[in-house]
Image (cartoon, rainbow, N blue to C red):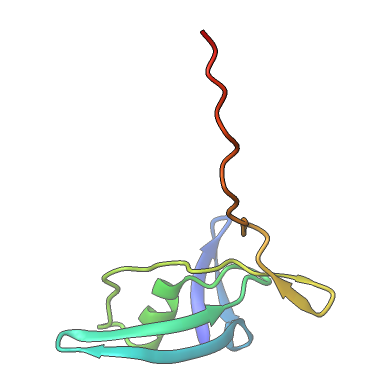
Length: 95
């Protein structure tokens, strides 16, 4: 699956199949579908809008939401931006 992109003023044609880790129809609506994808970032980021445009130029995105951003540490996928929620420390009031 080749996608044409502009990079540093030059048009590149790249095969992005290896960047599509998964793609599923998560929900069906009367006016479209919700597609859940896991896309790669190497050698360059594959944007959901570029993928849909390549699949069918008539498809359009209504909303794109990133749920996670994973990185590899060895063979383990981790969420580098995740936070653990802890109760806030009591506030000290100074007069």
